[in-house]
Amino acid sequence: MRLEKDLYVTEVRISKTVNAPYLIEAIGGRYECSLTLNDATLEAWGIDPSSELLGSGMVITLEPRPPSQVAEETDLLIESLEKTTRRKFKRMPNPQFTDELEYVVKLQTPRDNSPSIPCPYFEITLDLDEGEYLEFMELPADTIFRISASGKQTQKR
Image (cartoon, rainbow, N blue to C red; front, side):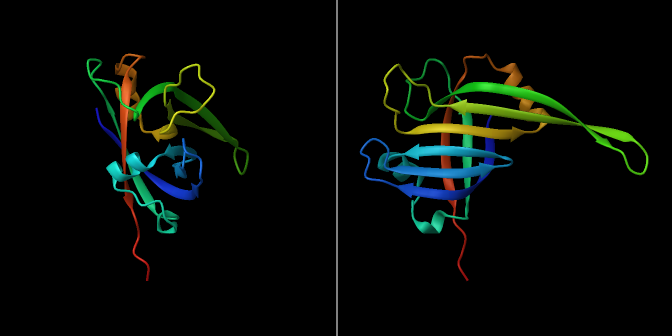
């Protein structure tokens, strides 16, 4: 299984915090994602955290890693996997309703009991289609995912 999703970058924050110098906020479908990154991760992914990144796209890739592989700082765990049915009622002109199914996965960087937030640190919430949801359902609950990303910077006119 390999999942690729487009994100729209809405905010890039750069700070002097040694542990977490870069924060990228992005929207994937209807949900906000937060990526706290360091120089090494940005360099490995080929992302330039400049104002050029704002308003552009970013592609994230999630892949389950074999349990035997050594843990890396870009590992994620499933926080939740949801399937929600929404019923929308329409009253005009004739009463009727439609059901909508929504599939959502939330992933997060594993944390220990330390009060500090690890870097890199990810909080990712993504819309899924039914096929992607079923693929997630087939995986063991303790599956560890490796995340990678690349920027899709747009050309200025």
